[in-house]
View: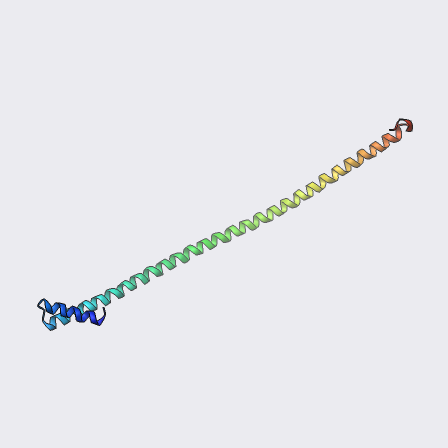
Length: 123
């Protein structure tokens, strides 16, 4: 409480019958109590803020751990998808090779059949 408030409080107390000494003492007690309460309130809020910070740090630490876990899982999935993609590509290459071999065999068979048929019956 500012010193001016202390003076006004003392004047108010004197106006209702307190002696100068009583008014000054009571005004000083008011000021002391107000200062103490303000400091206690600051301390209370500091403690609450510190507790809140601690809780948030713990929460963020947990979230960071979960994010790291998800990243590891995602990396594992990425590796698995890479392996699957390789297997699919390999399988498709094998299938294409088989199709090319079948087409080549059919062409070879068609050429062989055409060679067996006399030339006059060709188109």
